[in-house]
Image 1 (tube, rainbow, N blue to C red):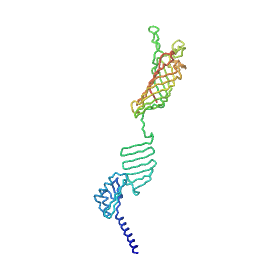
Image 2 (image 1 turned 90 degrees about the vertical axis):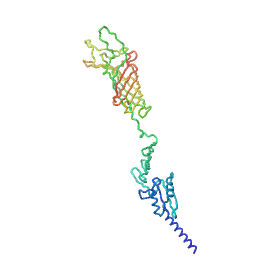
Image 3 (image 1 turned 120 degrees about the vertical axis):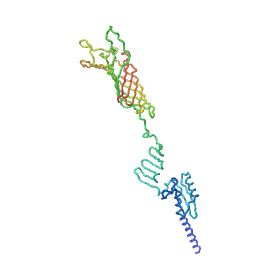
Image 4 (image 1 turned 120 degrees about the horizontal axis):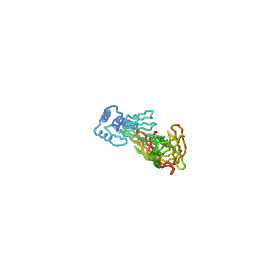
Length: 391
Protein backbone atom coordinates (compact mmCIF):
# COMPACT_ATOMS: atom_id res chain seq x y z
CA UNK A 1 0.00 0.00 0.00
CA UNK A 2 2.82 2.40 0.82
CA UNK A 3 4.45 1.61 -2.53
CA UNK A 4 1.21 2.37 -4.39
CA UNK A 5 0.85 5.74 -2.64
CA UNK A 6 4.46 6.59 -3.45
CA UNK A 7 3.93 5.87 -7.18
CA UNK A 8 0.83 8.11 -7.25
CA UNK A 9 2.72 10.95 -5.60
CA UNK A 10 5.56 10.57 -8.10
CA UNK A 11 3.16 10.75 -11.08
CA UNK A 12 1.41 13.79 -9.63
CA UNK A 13 4.73 15.56 -9.19
CA UNK A 14 5.81 14.74 -12.76
CA UNK A 15 2.56 16.03 -14.28
CA UNK A 16 2.78 19.13 -12.10
CA UNK A 17 6.31 19.86 -13.32
CA UNK A 18 5.24 19.22 -16.92
CA UNK A 19 2.25 21.54 -16.61
CA UNK A 20 4.40 24.18 -14.97
CA UNK A 21 6.97 23.82 -17.73
CA UNK A 22 4.26 24.23 -20.36
CA UNK A 23 3.00 27.31 -18.59
CA UNK A 24 6.55 28.71 -18.53
CA UNK A 25 7.14 27.95 -22.22
CA UNK A 26 7.18 30.81 -24.77
CA UNK A 27 6.63 30.11 -28.49
CA UNK A 28 7.07 32.96 -30.94
CA UNK A 29 6.97 33.18 -34.76
CA UNK A 30 8.95 35.74 -36.75
CA UNK A 31 8.23 36.65 -40.38
CA UNK A 32 11.75 36.60 -41.84
CA UNK A 33 10.95 38.70 -44.92
CA UNK A 34 9.07 41.52 -43.19
CA UNK A 35 10.96 41.09 -39.88
CA UNK A 36 7.79 41.29 -37.84
CA UNK A 37 6.38 39.17 -35.06
CA UNK A 38 3.55 37.03 -36.43
CA UNK A 39 0.31 37.79 -34.64
CA UNK A 40 1.52 41.03 -33.08
CA UNK A 41 -1.29 43.56 -32.91
CA UNK A 42 0.80 46.56 -31.91
CA UNK A 43 1.69 48.76 -34.88
CA UNK A 44 4.68 51.04 -35.45
CA UNK A 45 7.07 48.98 -33.32
CA UNK A 46 10.36 47.39 -34.21
CA UNK A 47 10.90 43.64 -34.07
CA UNK A 48 13.02 43.97 -30.94
CA UNK A 49 10.34 46.03 -29.23
CA UNK A 50 7.71 43.43 -30.08
CA UNK A 51 9.93 40.63 -28.75
CA UNK A 52 10.67 42.54 -25.54
CA UNK A 53 6.93 42.99 -24.95
CA UNK A 54 6.30 39.27 -25.52
CA UNK A 55 9.15 38.34 -23.15
CA UNK A 56 7.94 40.81 -20.54
CA UNK A 57 4.48 39.24 -20.48
CA UNK A 58 6.11 35.98 -19.43
CA UNK A 59 8.30 37.70 -16.89
CA UNK A 60 11.41 37.19 -19.01
CA UNK A 61 14.12 39.52 -20.24
CA UNK A 62 15.40 39.64 -23.83
CA UNK A 63 19.17 39.79 -23.42
CA UNK A 64 21.51 41.38 -25.95
CA UNK A 65 23.19 38.06 -26.67
CA UNK A 66 19.84 36.37 -27.44
CA UNK A 67 18.82 39.30 -29.64
CA UNK A 68 22.08 38.99 -31.61
CA UNK A 69 21.41 35.25 -32.09
CA UNK A 70 17.92 36.03 -33.39
CA UNK A 71 19.29 38.63 -35.80
CA UNK A 72 21.91 36.18 -37.06
CA UNK A 73 19.23 33.55 -37.71
CA UNK A 74 17.12 36.07 -39.62
CA UNK A 75 20.06 37.10 -41.82
CA UNK A 76 20.93 33.50 -42.66
CA UNK A 77 20.29 32.88 -46.38
CA UNK A 78 18.10 29.79 -46.34
CA UNK A 79 15.22 28.68 -48.54
CA UNK A 80 13.42 26.96 -45.68
CA UNK A 81 12.28 27.87 -42.18
CA UNK A 82 14.47 27.70 -39.10
CA UNK A 83 14.01 27.80 -35.36
CA UNK A 84 15.90 28.90 -32.27
CA UNK A 85 15.39 27.28 -28.84
CA UNK A 86 16.80 28.66 -25.59
CA UNK A 87 16.13 28.16 -21.90
CA UNK A 88 15.88 31.12 -19.58
CA UNK A 89 15.70 29.94 -15.98
CA UNK A 90 12.84 27.46 -15.76
CA UNK A 91 11.20 28.76 -18.93
CA UNK A 92 11.66 27.31 -22.40
CA UNK A 93 11.66 29.79 -25.30
CA UNK A 94 11.21 28.57 -28.87
CA UNK A 95 11.37 31.07 -31.70
CA UNK A 96 10.34 29.98 -35.22
CA UNK A 97 11.83 32.03 -38.07
CA UNK A 98 9.62 31.67 -41.14
CA UNK A 99 10.68 32.61 -44.65
CA UNK A 100 7.20 33.87 -45.56
CA UNK A 101 4.25 34.92 -43.52
CA UNK A 102 1.99 32.62 -45.55
CA UNK A 103 2.54 29.52 -43.49
CA UNK A 104 -0.47 29.15 -41.31
CA UNK A 105 -4.06 28.57 -42.14
CA UNK A 106 -5.12 31.49 -39.98
CA UNK A 107 -3.18 33.84 -42.24
CA UNK A 108 -4.60 32.59 -45.57
CA UNK A 109 -7.50 34.45 -47.12
CA UNK A 110 -9.35 32.67 -49.90
CA UNK A 111 -11.83 34.59 -52.07
CA UNK A 112 -13.88 33.53 -55.07
CA UNK A 113 -13.62 36.03 -57.93
CA UNK A 114 -15.07 36.06 -61.49
CA UNK A 115 -11.53 35.49 -62.78
CA UNK A 116 -10.90 32.48 -60.49
CA UNK A 117 -10.00 31.61 -56.91
CA UNK A 118 -7.70 34.05 -55.11
CA UNK A 119 -5.47 32.81 -52.27
CA UNK A 120 -3.85 35.85 -50.64
CA UNK A 121 -1.91 36.53 -47.47
CA UNK A 122 -1.78 40.33 -47.73
CA UNK A 123 -1.69 43.12 -50.25
CA UNK A 124 1.90 42.17 -51.15
CA UNK A 125 1.39 38.46 -51.88
CA UNK A 126 -1.35 36.83 -53.91
CA UNK A 127 -1.95 33.58 -55.77
CA UNK A 128 -4.89 33.46 -58.18
CA UNK A 129 -6.00 30.42 -60.19
CA UNK A 130 -8.56 30.94 -62.93
CA UNK A 131 -9.49 30.36 -66.56
CA UNK A 132 -6.74 32.75 -67.66
CA UNK A 133 -4.06 30.68 -65.90
CA UNK A 134 -2.11 31.06 -62.66
CA UNK A 135 -1.17 34.51 -61.41
CA UNK A 136 1.39 34.88 -58.61
CA UNK A 137 2.19 38.24 -57.00
CA UNK A 138 5.08 38.69 -54.59
CA UNK A 139 5.75 42.31 -53.73
CA UNK A 140 6.78 44.15 -56.88
CA UNK A 141 7.22 40.87 -58.79
CA UNK A 142 4.42 39.21 -60.73
CA UNK A 143 4.36 35.97 -62.72
CA UNK A 144 1.47 35.01 -65.00
CA UNK A 145 1.34 31.50 -66.50
CA UNK A 146 -1.20 31.26 -69.35
CA UNK A 147 -2.04 28.87 -72.18
CA UNK A 148 0.34 30.67 -74.54
CA UNK A 149 3.34 31.30 -72.29
CA UNK A 150 4.82 32.83 -69.13
CA UNK A 151 4.94 36.56 -68.38
CA UNK A 152 7.16 37.79 -65.55
CA UNK A 153 7.22 41.42 -64.41
CA UNK A 154 9.70 42.89 -61.97
CA UNK A 155 9.17 46.61 -61.59
CA UNK A 156 9.02 48.07 -65.09
CA UNK A 157 10.90 45.17 -66.69
CA UNK A 158 8.76 42.52 -68.42
CA UNK A 159 10.04 39.13 -69.63
CA UNK A 160 7.94 36.94 -71.94
CA UNK A 161 8.38 33.26 -72.76
CA UNK A 162 5.99 32.16 -75.51
CA UNK A 163 4.97 28.58 -76.25
CA UNK A 164 5.60 27.99 -79.97
CA UNK A 165 4.78 30.59 -82.63
CA UNK A 166 2.97 33.62 -81.22
CA UNK A 167 1.55 35.37 -84.25
CA UNK A 168 -0.80 37.50 -82.16
CA UNK A 169 2.10 39.06 -80.22
CA UNK A 170 4.40 39.74 -83.17
CA UNK A 171 3.88 43.17 -84.60
CA UNK A 172 4.50 42.94 -88.31
CA UNK A 173 5.85 45.95 -90.20
CA UNK A 174 3.29 48.11 -92.02
CA UNK A 175 4.79 47.79 -95.49
CA UNK A 176 3.43 48.72 -98.90
CA UNK A 177 1.61 45.79 -100.51
CA UNK A 178 1.53 45.24 -104.27
CA UNK A 179 -1.47 42.93 -104.07
CA UNK A 180 -5.06 42.91 -105.29
CA UNK A 181 -6.84 44.54 -108.21
CA UNK A 182 -4.87 47.24 -110.01
CA UNK A 183 -6.00 49.61 -112.75
CA UNK A 184 -3.38 51.41 -114.85
CA UNK A 185 -4.11 54.40 -117.09
CA UNK A 186 -1.61 56.35 -119.17
CA UNK A 187 -0.39 57.45 -122.57
CA UNK A 188 1.52 55.52 -125.18
CA UNK A 189 3.89 56.11 -128.04
CA UNK A 190 5.55 54.23 -130.91
CA UNK A 191 9.25 54.97 -130.93
CA UNK A 192 11.13 53.63 -133.89
CA UNK A 193 11.89 54.51 -137.51
CA UNK A 194 9.93 54.63 -140.73
CA UNK A 195 11.16 54.62 -144.33
CA UNK A 196 11.78 58.18 -145.47
CA UNK A 197 9.68 59.40 -148.37
CA UNK A 198 11.26 61.72 -150.90
CA UNK A 199 9.64 65.10 -151.54
CA UNK A 200 7.95 64.81 -154.99
CA UNK A 201 8.79 68.37 -155.99
CA UNK A 202 10.30 71.47 -154.45
CA UNK A 203 7.81 73.34 -152.28
CA UNK A 204 5.53 70.33 -151.82
CA UNK A 205 3.87 69.91 -148.37
CA UNK A 206 5.97 68.10 -145.81
CA UNK A 207 5.24 64.40 -145.55
CA UNK A 208 3.54 63.27 -142.33
CA UNK A 209 4.76 59.80 -141.27
CA UNK A 210 2.16 57.06 -141.06
CA UNK A 211 2.79 56.43 -137.36
CA UNK A 212 2.56 60.01 -136.15
CA UNK A 213 0.32 59.87 -133.06
CA UNK A 214 -1.90 62.32 -131.27
CA UNK A 215 0.04 62.78 -127.98
CA UNK A 216 -3.03 63.07 -125.73
CA UNK A 217 -5.33 60.82 -127.73
CA UNK A 218 -3.11 57.74 -127.71
CA UNK A 219 -3.93 56.01 -124.43
CA UNK A 220 -2.91 52.90 -122.55
CA UNK A 221 -5.18 51.00 -120.11
CA UNK A 222 -4.68 47.85 -118.07
CA UNK A 223 -6.52 45.78 -115.45
CA UNK A 224 -4.32 43.53 -113.32
CA UNK A 225 -4.79 41.00 -110.52
CA UNK A 226 -1.48 40.89 -108.65
CA UNK A 227 0.09 38.79 -105.92
CA UNK A 228 3.56 38.57 -104.38
CA UNK A 229 5.93 36.24 -102.54
CA UNK A 230 8.14 37.67 -99.78
CA UNK A 231 11.76 36.66 -100.29
CA UNK A 232 13.27 38.68 -97.43
CA UNK A 233 11.70 40.93 -94.80
CA UNK A 234 13.09 43.34 -92.21
CA UNK A 235 11.60 45.81 -89.79
CA UNK A 236 11.31 48.63 -92.34
CA UNK A 237 11.59 46.97 -95.76
CA UNK A 238 11.07 43.74 -97.68
CA UNK A 239 12.22 42.24 -100.95
CA UNK A 240 9.36 40.55 -102.79
CA UNK A 241 8.60 38.87 -106.10
CA UNK A 242 5.40 40.18 -107.63
CA UNK A 243 3.40 38.36 -110.27
CA UNK A 244 -0.10 38.42 -111.64
CA UNK A 245 -2.31 38.39 -114.71
CA UNK A 246 -3.54 41.40 -116.65
CA UNK A 247 -5.36 42.50 -119.77
CA UNK A 248 -3.99 45.65 -121.38
CA UNK A 249 -4.82 47.78 -124.40
CA UNK A 250 -2.72 49.91 -126.71
CA UNK A 251 -4.82 52.60 -128.40
CA UNK A 252 -2.66 54.29 -131.05
CA UNK A 253 -4.54 57.36 -132.29
CA UNK A 254 -3.08 58.68 -135.54
CA UNK A 255 -2.64 62.37 -136.22
CA UNK A 256 -3.59 62.13 -139.92
CA UNK A 257 -6.41 60.83 -142.14
CA UNK A 258 -4.77 57.61 -143.38
CA UNK A 259 -6.36 54.37 -142.16
CA UNK A 260 -4.20 51.32 -141.31
CA UNK A 261 -5.12 48.32 -143.45
CA UNK A 262 -3.73 44.84 -144.04
CA UNK A 263 -1.97 44.76 -147.40
CA UNK A 264 -0.79 41.70 -149.34
CA UNK A 265 2.62 41.63 -147.65
CA UNK A 266 2.67 44.41 -145.05
CA UNK A 267 0.58 46.92 -143.14
CA UNK A 268 -0.45 49.84 -145.34
CA UNK A 269 -2.06 53.23 -144.78
CA UNK A 270 -4.69 54.44 -147.22
CA UNK A 271 -6.87 57.51 -147.47
CA UNK A 272 -10.60 57.71 -148.14
CA UNK A 273 -11.64 60.04 -150.97
CA UNK A 274 -15.04 61.59 -151.58
CA UNK A 275 -16.97 61.54 -154.87
CA UNK A 276 -15.23 64.76 -155.78
CA UNK A 277 -11.85 63.13 -155.25
CA UNK A 278 -11.12 65.07 -152.07
CA UNK A 279 -9.49 63.37 -149.09
CA UNK A 280 -12.02 62.66 -146.31
CA UNK A 281 -10.97 64.10 -142.96
CA UNK A 282 -11.24 61.86 -139.88
CA UNK A 283 -12.29 63.08 -136.44
CA UNK A 284 -11.01 59.82 -134.95
CA UNK A 285 -8.53 57.41 -136.47
CA UNK A 286 -6.89 54.75 -134.32
CA UNK A 287 -5.45 51.25 -134.22
CA UNK A 288 -5.99 49.19 -131.05
CA UNK A 289 -4.23 46.06 -129.80
CA UNK A 290 -5.21 44.03 -126.72
CA UNK A 291 -2.94 41.58 -124.87
CA UNK A 292 -3.11 38.98 -122.15
CA UNK A 293 0.00 39.71 -120.05
CA UNK A 294 1.95 37.96 -117.32
CA UNK A 295 4.05 40.52 -115.35
CA UNK A 296 7.02 39.44 -113.22
CA UNK A 297 7.97 42.28 -110.88
CA UNK A 298 10.75 41.94 -108.27
CA UNK A 299 10.35 44.91 -105.95
CA UNK A 300 11.37 46.49 -102.68
CA UNK A 301 8.54 47.46 -100.32
CA UNK A 302 9.08 50.07 -97.63
CA UNK A 303 7.08 51.41 -94.69
CA UNK A 304 3.89 53.20 -95.68
CA UNK A 305 5.05 56.27 -93.75
CA UNK A 306 8.18 56.66 -95.89
CA UNK A 307 8.31 59.01 -98.88
CA UNK A 308 9.12 56.16 -101.29
CA UNK A 309 6.98 53.14 -100.51
CA UNK A 310 7.93 50.79 -103.34
CA UNK A 311 10.46 50.43 -106.17
CA UNK A 312 9.83 47.69 -108.74
CA UNK A 313 11.82 46.81 -111.85
CA UNK A 314 10.82 43.74 -113.83
CA UNK A 315 9.38 42.55 -117.08
CA UNK A 316 6.40 40.98 -118.82
CA UNK A 317 5.41 38.59 -121.57
CA UNK A 318 2.16 38.94 -123.53
CA UNK A 319 -0.03 37.16 -126.02
CA UNK A 320 -2.06 39.24 -128.48
CA UNK A 321 -5.83 38.82 -128.08
CA UNK A 322 -7.18 41.10 -130.80
CA UNK A 323 -6.34 43.93 -133.18
CA UNK A 324 -8.72 46.36 -134.87
CA UNK A 325 -8.96 49.80 -136.46
CA UNK A 326 -11.63 52.44 -135.91
CA UNK A 327 -12.15 55.64 -137.93
CA UNK A 328 -14.95 58.23 -137.80
CA UNK A 329 -15.46 60.66 -140.69
CA UNK A 330 -15.47 64.26 -139.55
CA UNK A 331 -18.33 65.58 -141.70
CA UNK A 332 -20.70 62.60 -142.03
CA UNK A 333 -19.86 60.82 -138.77
CA UNK A 334 -19.68 57.50 -140.57
CA UNK A 335 -17.89 54.79 -138.61
CA UNK A 336 -15.33 52.58 -140.30
CA UNK A 337 -14.20 49.60 -138.24
CA UNK A 338 -12.11 46.62 -139.30
CA UNK A 339 -10.84 43.67 -137.28
CA UNK A 340 -7.59 42.20 -138.55
CA UNK A 341 -4.26 41.13 -137.13
CA UNK A 342 -2.54 43.81 -139.28
CA UNK A 343 0.62 41.66 -139.06
CA UNK A 344 1.00 42.57 -135.36
CA UNK A 345 3.31 40.21 -133.51
CA UNK A 346 1.33 37.51 -131.64
CA UNK A 347 3.83 37.63 -128.78
CA UNK A 348 5.27 40.59 -126.92
CA UNK A 349 7.84 41.05 -124.16
CA UNK A 350 9.38 44.05 -122.46
CA UNK A 351 10.53 45.76 -119.28
CA UNK A 352 8.53 47.67 -116.69
CA UNK A 353 9.28 49.95 -113.74
CA UNK A 354 6.88 51.03 -110.99
CA UNK A 355 7.23 53.54 -108.18
CA UNK A 356 4.90 54.05 -105.21
CA UNK A 357 5.16 57.47 -103.57
CA UNK A 358 3.48 58.78 -100.43
CA UNK A 359 0.68 61.32 -101.03
CA UNK A 360 1.05 60.82 -104.80
CA UNK A 361 -0.35 58.33 -107.36
CA UNK A 362 1.80 55.32 -108.15
CA UNK A 363 3.80 55.68 -111.38
CA UNK A 364 4.59 53.08 -114.05
CA UNK A 365 6.68 52.91 -117.20
CA UNK A 366 6.80 50.02 -119.73
CA UNK A 367 8.73 49.50 -122.94
CA UNK A 368 8.37 46.69 -125.46
CA UNK A 369 11.63 45.01 -126.41
CA UNK A 370 9.88 43.11 -129.20
CA UNK A 371 8.76 45.02 -132.35
CA UNK A 372 5.08 45.76 -132.82
CA UNK A 373 4.86 44.11 -136.24
CA UNK A 374 6.13 40.82 -137.57
CA UNK A 375 9.57 41.03 -139.21
CA UNK A 376 9.33 42.47 -142.72
CA UNK A 377 5.60 43.24 -142.33
CA UNK A 378 5.97 46.73 -140.91
CA UNK A 379 8.47 49.27 -139.60
CA UNK A 380 10.58 48.61 -136.52
CA UNK A 381 8.20 50.27 -134.07
CA UNK A 382 7.99 49.39 -130.36
CA UNK A 383 5.23 50.20 -127.93
CA UNK A 384 5.88 52.49 -124.99
CA UNK A 385 3.47 53.41 -122.18
CA UNK A 386 3.63 55.47 -118.98
CA UNK A 387 1.11 56.77 -116.49
CA UNK A 388 -0.39 56.19 -113.05
CA UNK A 389 -1.99 53.39 -111.07
CA UNK A 390 -5.51 54.33 -109.97
CA UNK A 391 -6.25 51.36 -107.64
